[in-house]
Amino acid sequence: MRNQKNFEASDICRIFVRHLSDYMKKKEKNTVNKLITSQSKGEESKPVYRSTKVISPIKVKDFNYSEFKKIADKAPFTQAEWASILHVSERTLQRYAKNNGSFAPINAERALQIENVLKEGTFTFGKVENFYNWLKRNPYMLGGNLSFESLTSASGIERILTQLHRIQHGLFA
Image (cartoon, rainbow, N blue to C red; front, side, top):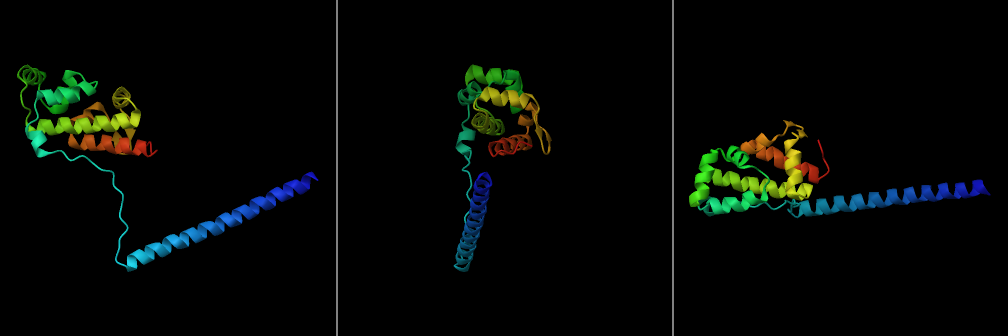
């Protein structure tokens, strides 16, 4: 009696696998047929892109210390770290703070890029502090290690964003 139940269970599994296989073949044919039909009509499948925020030239031009302070308050960076990231001296940041000075467009753009990195880091790790701690540990990446110093260059920022997107999609290397 016991062997008969196991035999029935194996039959059920075999039937299930066969039906699943048939279903997958039909689904594949339908997908191929839709693709062929859309290509014959001259239509292309449209890729899905994640929207990115474009930095407005006006925002960069009128970027002053009060706008920088809004970004800096969200980040756990020290003034020395901000100075390093923006390629200015700490004294220059202090002078901007004193009279709400305007940043050079290149520094303003870098601050806005860092704001984007912070948003992605918060999205990935839940808290900006967790992202900061991850970055301070010099995480490994396929192209080499990342570090806090990666925030000082455009290519480093791009590598950090790439790694954050990989983590979001479950690719940790």
